[in-house]
Length: 271
Image (cartoon, rainbow, N blue to C red; front, side, top):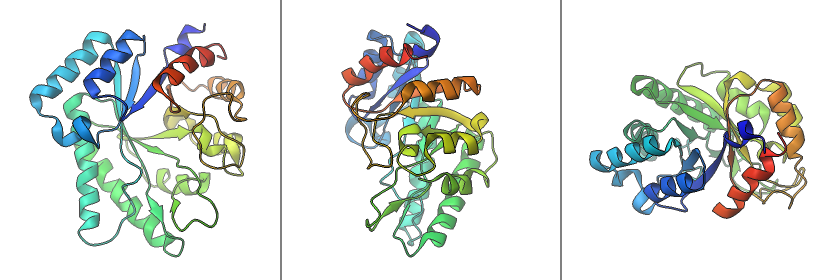
């Protein structure tokens, strides 16, 4: 097994476990990187006080766990409605505060979504909001990673922004900050015509801090399949990234915790 690659492959725990239990699970299974959402139940960021956060930080330090946070893509970062837009600003600031409180190394954020006839306004609104939260993150010592999201069916009313390289570039070309980097979801790139190679050829790889992994079908629909259930070429992805000098971490984001754990060994053998 290629240890250098295995140790860089993390697990998207999401909402599957209470944060403290996720840290213990990761330690038990030799996983050094986890990604969690803080939106529901005991993991809602409103449920963490200083005492509980100290326990989380101590457990991460004890076990050598790198913790990342993943905000909810269902929250529309491109929202411009009065009051609702202000709430989205507060939501993003709260994720930054939670990252600082918990010692998380990054927060994955998104560009929002549009309703077909309001794309320019939505994109501008989202850009301005991301600029504001990046400026806030700079003052707190936090780091945000903008993810390229998935395409939706052509006749869907709602479509995610930043699902193509052109749309993703709209944001990262206009935000230059040490508090702002990129999260490349490779399977999302597999769904659009430019594909993974198109993204790799056009995106600034030196700004990519995370690569997210799942299987799916070329130009297909959004699915986070277990490796081998789609047609994604993982060996080609690893070769392309590693030969280009990528040194960040990978995150498995599919199936169950056991599925993602088993895939770490599979992926490590491809490195």
